[in-house]
Image (cartoon, rainbow, N blue to C red; front, side):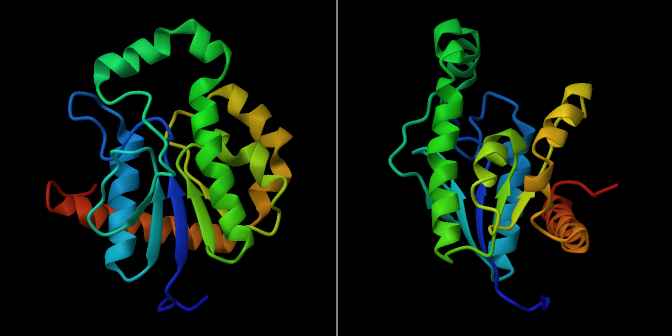
Length: 188
């Protein structure tokens, strides 16, 4: 892949939280994803950023599918996390899946060169049915021991891109993110 090739990228963090994140809460994956999406778009790549209504980015295209957010502030987010009935019925995950399935279908039609998910669990089970779709996962959480078992269960979906391409992509994405943050503070 030539460095000057314009990529068509579908990207997502969560289907139930708008981006940028609500100002009264901390959710670093959204901050990083927005910086990466905007940086890639400014470099000339076509980025479709998936999120619920209320998601607004300056340079990347936003795709909401008219999905309402489940939380628009810290109190609603905490209430959602403590609402046992919603969690028992996987409601937040269904919001994620609603957007992720659209991304995979569009990638299958050739609308994307790569999909980038900022929470691997959103796409792991769906990616099994779309083995020809290149997917990049970013794990923002500590690597808990149970992640190893999950990644082993879905190992075949984690190898859709050659490791060299993944490494190059991660380095490029890191570079874009660091430059974006330089305006606020230098990278380590």
